[in-house]
Image 1 (cartoon, rainbow, N blue to C red):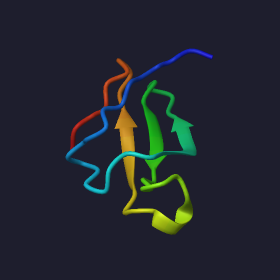
Image 2 (image 1 turned 90 degrees about the horizontal axis):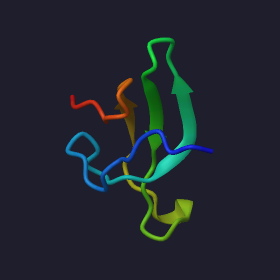
Image 3 (image 1 turned 30 degrees about the vertical axis):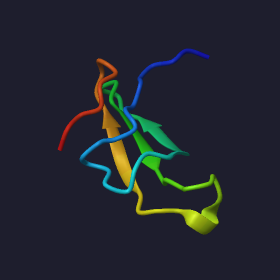
Image 4 (image 1 turned 180 degrees about the vertical axis):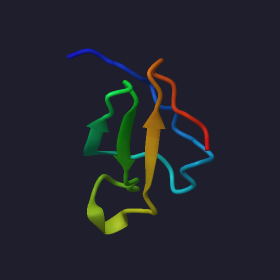
Length: 64
């Protein structure tokens, strides 16, 4: 495996926080869309509001 991007803990586009999920797809353009469902303790019992994070072809989270 290779790290293709680093996502900061706090993105203004994800007000609930970051908690990367297994929801991920790569577009033909090289951009990646990944789901984020944050949790206080790693369980679904404390999950927060989720978001989608778009990562551009240069491995940078795109801002909204």
